[in-house]
Image 1: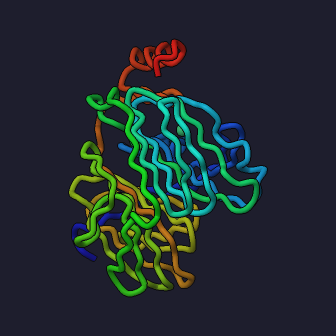
Image 2: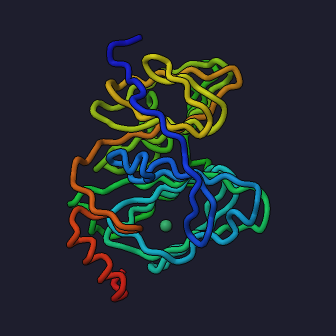
Image 3: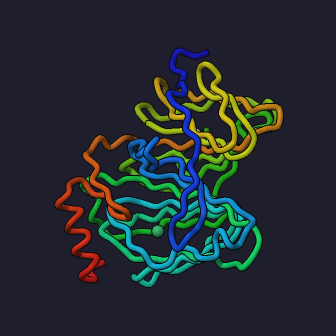
Length: 280
Ligand code: FE2
């Protein structure tokens, strides 16, 4: 094992939760067990074949002070905001939405039946960027590079760099890495994160051994990375599919309530006042 190997400091299992108008999901970050993982504020996995679990969707709601990242695996979701932006997320697409000073949007399933599966990650913004104009970085599946850095390893590079390949997401504040890694049975891959990044590995299919000490992670378990930049992973006998997500920690005070994430209570109160006055 290399001396700069990361290890898994903690293992966290997602908790059943509902959000929006009653969508059932598994919350992995943003729970009492793991309230945040600087710079990440929340990770939800939604995955169901039952329309009653997702049909209600996420009707109009505000955001201010951070970014929401939606990665669809199955199903179609239409988003629409109060600034006139609208689009449909299809399987394999990514929407990296910088809410900045604020917007009101809805995220509604564009299907009546079938499978809906994907992730929503919340990424914090530094104090200096919390009130910037909202911005979307949205990419169809064919715009997400796929690399094969080793035998039995296939990586979708949403953000960050693998070899010479850069993911399409641009966010200099946290320099995020967001990789969707498919490992064949017993396949192995080592990946070096940028120095100083904090992050996690989340297994969403199969099983993998991760980090120094080969910590086993089952499906729907997240391992918090610590102690080194090189993340080693080996799939179990049935293969694995894994998210590796990391970013530069902001190390700033966090004042959060629902869809607003600021630095101070006063800024939070201002967010509520601005929202109620229709200033989003
Ligand atoms: Fe939202």
